[in-house]
Length: 331
Length: 220
Ligand SMILES: Cc1cc2nc3c(=O)[nH]c(=O)nc-3n(C[C@H](O)[C@H](O)[C@H](O)COP(=O)(O)OP(=O)(O)OC[C@H]3O[C@@H](n4cnc5c(N)ncnc54)[C@H](O)[C@@H]3O)c2cc1C
Ligand code: SF4
Ligand code: FES
Ligand code: FES
Image (cartoon, rainbow over all chains, first blue to last red; front, side, top):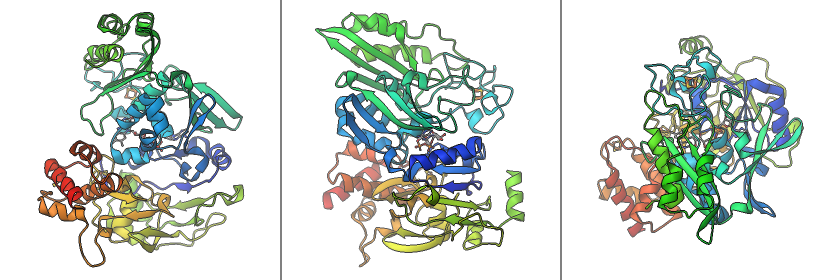
């Protein structure tokens, strides 16, 4: 399907403030499309799988960019690029799990253009869907991946509901592991959504990956100082080190006091349509030493409840091992 | 696809764009920076676009409509050009400005052959809207040579180390190397590996490219 032609026609708007952007989003509704770095969007347009009438380029809105320290922690504008996150000393110094996750996204060029908001709101990478097939997620009546012949090596272990696609976002797992809050602006003003509730599965809405409505904008991500300087772990397993999406990744934040895990978040992308918190393993780790024994005990429960598809059984030991390493370190 | 091809054959003119120059932070609602245009759909690359260049018709322009003509800063020169709202920078560079050093391979952000610098940072020009680089400095491989014809140290090192094999990915590799050394003039080999990771080479000349960048770092 890789053709070299221009994208189909659309009207292009380049507002310079949030208010103008919201007006345009409200005006165009489902026929409008927000573009941040465009690294997900342009492929959809080129493939003719999505054909918005109006594209609202957020690149000119200065107030959406940048990383600020606040009394409660740190606030990252949605238009901040992944490279800026990797290079920012507040993030790498105090919330390193996010810098590590961002550094493992795609390629240097894509990180230079791709934004945090775009990475968190990116659409599913199921190739049946991306190639324009009329599956459930595209508003149709079938799932091509969840069939005996379906190529579903990359698909989900948990939370299937007609659609078996996973969240492809590396930063999503880190954002949830940091208990971030998502600041969303829309026609009704501002609303703040906890990161864990920001991502939605097919049972909630099969056509969207997050709670952001077409008329709304993710404005910023707030990370509370609770986890500043915690013990972080991020690891991503992908077919290649560049470009490839996580088969499974793990992001964790752990606070250890006197050799005992006081609090911990362990989150995996690539196993469900939303970043999956591994609460069972967290509960086992809390109150124990972060050693090999705890790791084996907790990691062994990580895949409880998994319902693998034909070709993705390998994800079960993979996620268990990643959770173990998140608790005890790589050694 | 059949549909698009049809459109190309029957409708090869676009409606002129609504477009206002330069981003200005004090601009208010009434001055939403906008490009409203109906670009024609070209299905088979360059020639069609060249044919479109400068086209306009007398369809009713949308309110506030102005010229689709923009001026871009490419390799230190001001280049006026007629740009569709839905046009990628790679298309503009190659098919409207004749800068064919920038290669177009996957057109999907997956190879880095189209790498250019925008304000000294690498971007895949296939995945950049041309209208988003107004007011920014674009550097392509053609812009690296000194006025006296001397090659950029990265280009020279590629020759000295026999970096390329077939050469198709080379302009992109050069641009990533140039950006890397601007940021980090004496990188480790591992840092170069990471910095060049977004440039695919079908010939697998990666090690030669690494040698080239390490040499350029030593001599510059
Ligand atoms: C070859 C390739 C490899 C990749 N590999 C990886 C990988 O390994 N890991 C990974 O995580 N990602 C990967 N990606 C995805 C890439 O990282 C994302 O596409 C990119 O980060 C998206 O950011 P963007 O700003 O370019 O998004 P855009 O394309 O501009 O936007 C993406 C989506 O988010 C919406 N959106 C953007 N900003 C906002 C906002 N502020 N509020 C609400 N909605 C918004 C858009 O409407 C759109 O639907 C890869 C992409 C490519 C092309
Ligand atoms: S997994 Fe989801 S996106 Fe993929 S074919 Fe099935 S319904 Fe469509
Ligand atoms: S042509 Fe742009 S990344 Fe391949
Ligand atoms: S030298 Fe042939 S593709 Fe790189």
